[in-house]
Amino acid sequence: MSESALEGAIFFMMRTYLDSGLVTPEQANHVLQRLQERTKEYCSSRYHSGGAKFRAE
Image (tube, rainbow, N blue to C red; front, side):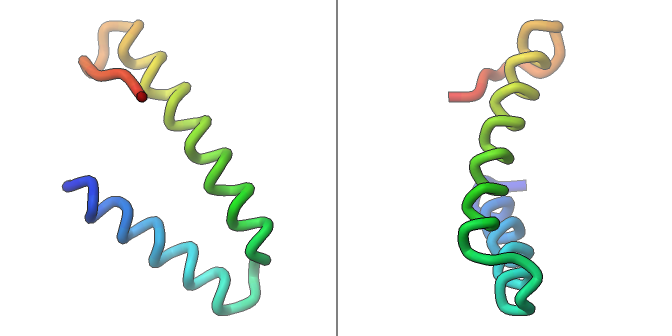
């Protein structure tokens, strides 16, 4: 999956939740921040454990 495809998928899901009123813009921003933190942690642990050979920037 390309980076732009992943971004599009995440944006589509977030927009769906926002448009339906299930989350506020503030909640959406908080979720995106947590997703970024969790992604960095995941990539770091995979890199250090000998899994995928990449590191979050």
